[in-house]
Image 1 (cartoon, rainbow, N blue to C red):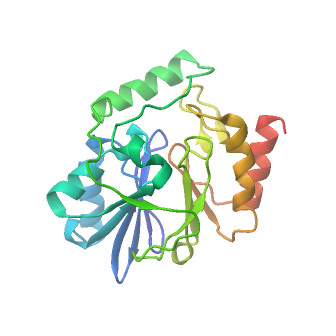
Image 2: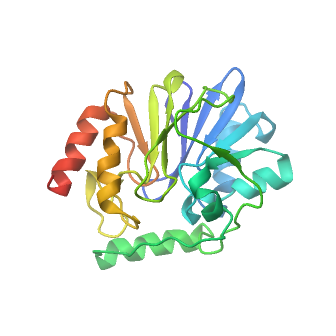
Length: 238
């Protein structure tokens, strides 16, 4: 799905990944689930691109529903995969998330699990090699993605600001569709290691100029960063 010039999404409001398309090539932000490989190929074809145009993958964090096809791209096509140094071990499967499921509604949770089964999300291929990145770094990839530390959901959660796409990708730093309750709108994400730190980290996004706020779960938010943060804090009661 084309969202805007230079900006595409694959997946849906349950699990999504993104493509930044520039003259220099394509940068992938997050890799969804393994079954999104076919969605990736179809989107690239619609763009007049191929896997050979992908210059790099940047992961917002190291959880399984964001790793998806990343190792396949790295192993079979030589595409480098970048992840924050604090989540490198998580992306390699060496450490497990330290979180709980929290509140749930049966229908929404069942829908999430069924989608994960359909997209082969319960059989994660962890990465064997990663390129560690750090807060403030600007990567030499299409769109010049800038790394913004957003710890809380995981120790190495990041946001990724891509000015040419007028977008900031936030992974699970927030959500606009709670996969376990179905509640919509900007709010704290589930499966978060440290919810208090995740909320505090939102201050790192203040002042960023981007129309699009793009989570790993939920509808794309086009109301800007400031309004998204306000809505999350309201939802969290802070």
